[in-house]
Image 1 (cartoon, one colour):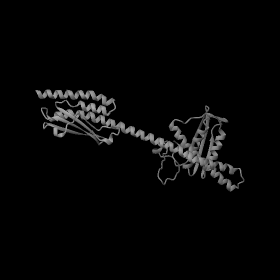
Image 2 (tube, rainbow, N blue to C red):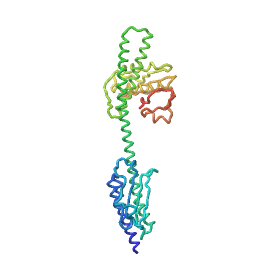
Image 3 (tube, helix red, strand yellow):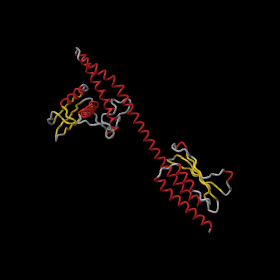
Image 4 (tube, helix red, strand yellow):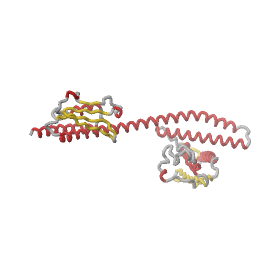
Amino acid sequence: SMVDIFKLELKEHIDAILIRFGRRFLFTELNEALINTFIDSIPDRKNILQCELILQADLFPTYSQFHFSNCWLPKKEKMTSQKEILLPIYSNTQQVGELIFTYQTHPIEFEFIVKQVNMLFDLLSGALSKHLDIQSKELSRKQAEDSEKATKEFVTMVNHEIRTPLVGILGSADLLETTYLTDEQKKYLADIQHSGEMLNFVINDLLDFNKLHSGLLRINDQPFEWLQLHNYVYNLVSIKKKNTTLNFIYKDTLPEYVYGDKKRIQQILLNLIGNSLKFTLKGEINIYISWADDKLKIDVKDTGIGIPEYAQKKIFDAFYQVDRSSTRQFEGLGMGLA
């Protein structure tokens, strides 16, 4: 019959569109030109007369066109034999637009028309959802990059604004050390020097973390005197001991000179020991140092409060602290282990 012929022609027309645009929507960026081509291809001029797509402008910031149609006619010019099918388009429960079909009410029944246009609707809905997902991920990536850039600029600014007066404080402390001081004054001076060194240490940690994530951190291996590093670390952390016993335990005899990056080894040791001192209010901290196969091994063990199992994987993330509350007992930025 003539109706069956019309149905077959419409089905073949829709199938051709699905084949043509299915692959293009999958592998090609969904831009305005592609949407226009898709909308223009839908009418067969016998059954589906016109097609219109209206998008929510605020959800598509990269688009300049939000209304797509193929020779859409004003309502008053439509014939009484024409009707509309309006299908709202959703992505993650949010309406992002609507697809409108104008169809001829005869000779093909409404149910058959709906079945065919629904396949086109599903294809376009999937393509729009994919586009929005990609757009969202790109926006998140850009925001993360902007945030990281702002953090780096802030760290650089902090370095300049804090380190400059700090250098003056430490320099003045060194000059004071050359003058005559009472025992009590020497103690106060030692506290000033220690606090200044620790602040300088924190600034270096921030800068090195910044360099690490920028790919600019370099390891500078060269021979250095181990005893000199040992004495520096011990003198710096021993002031903070209070009720804690700090023991350097040598399992093997070390060579006088060790090959490696002295600054980084010193930095790691200070962070690990400093962490132990912070969380060991009473007890002991043992630093085991061994030498085997021309390799230096250092283990730091303490009798402190330990780390909860749920936090053990996170403590190596920057700025993470097990206790983040404003009333937390222990100080720190959460940078040492990172």
